[in-house]
Length: 316
Image (cartoon, rainbow, N blue to C red; front, side, top):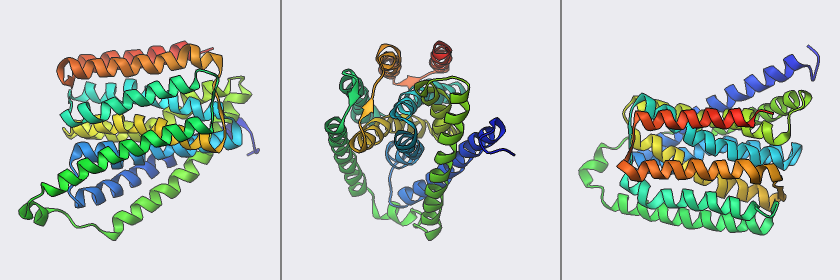
């Protein structure tokens, strides 16, 4: 097998996506069990632990893409992943089972998701997201973390002695799963960046298109798997919290960290289409949430059709 051949790149792409998925599953399972062992509720686990865990692929792909390929790849992966989270992940989950919206997620987390999207577009509108912009994003992340930690403290104080006695114990195996998941994510992201970038570059596609499609879809697999499984099990708060939290971390943590390390260039085409698309999907989701406090199967169909249209319009 020749190094750099299309078959090699396809195998890297497939292997990278598979490792990302397996790594995220290990990370989600281990982190979720550890969180539940200290009494966090499903909505809070979704917005925090699982959302952060499933954001790890975007972080690794964006960092490696920005450092070894181009910042267009990292930015495309984030914008594309956030759109995929709303259109594909929540849409597919709602098609399986209507998703009830947690009042806590709606009042405390959704505003941060909207703020993150507005900040990304606003800071990138001049063509670059620099170190100062990255520090600002990370500062908002700190504020979000403070809000979440206060909620966790309130939850902890409300746990009775009887409820605490019934909680599962934290196990060393859960910590090992977290570590194993992170290792798989690091390796999988390297393969995904290398295989996806090389294959599509040879075919003449731009870095931003690569990030918005192949890499975004690959890094959204953990969110898709976690949310669909949660929908099947009837844990709607978990599904919605996972997507809302992931979209917050994608922008505030991933873009913030990458921008501090190296300036992120924002192409005119991104400002002309991808940024408006991100705002449109975010506004659509918020509208659906506030309209009836749930995302119905019809709403899910609308979201999925919107995502298919987004991908179609990206094609050169």
